[in-house]
Amino acid sequence: MRPLDLTTGDATMRRRSRSRVGIALAAAVVLATAGLAGADHYPPVPGGVQKKDRKVLDALRRLSYADSYEKALDPIEICGCLEETCYDNELMISCGGEMEPFYAGALTAVRRTSRATCLVCGCTFDYATLRATPVCAGF
Image (cartoon, rainbow, N blue to C red):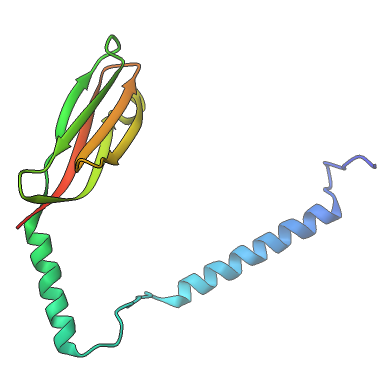
């Protein structure tokens, strides 16, 4: 195996770098000339059906809400969990969790349990706030 000449560069490396620059330039030209791309994945249905669907989605947006619940964690307690629920007769759509500040620890669990609760667990090595946010829909 011959040593690599770092002063002038190897011919193979120069060809590779030129081809990478060419590919990057071509990609930039394609993206610049493409304009805005929109995707409409709605199946071909009559306009009345689309209007009703929009009304249903708007109603779901108005009925859904998210409440955040917090728990302070410190280096003495190290780990903790929150298990929050929606109000009675409401449907849990999703569950979210976070650690604030994000670099102060790690989330160990964020999930919706079988009892329709939002379980968020995390551990910290510094002072942090553990936050659970269930997204609910009330009817």
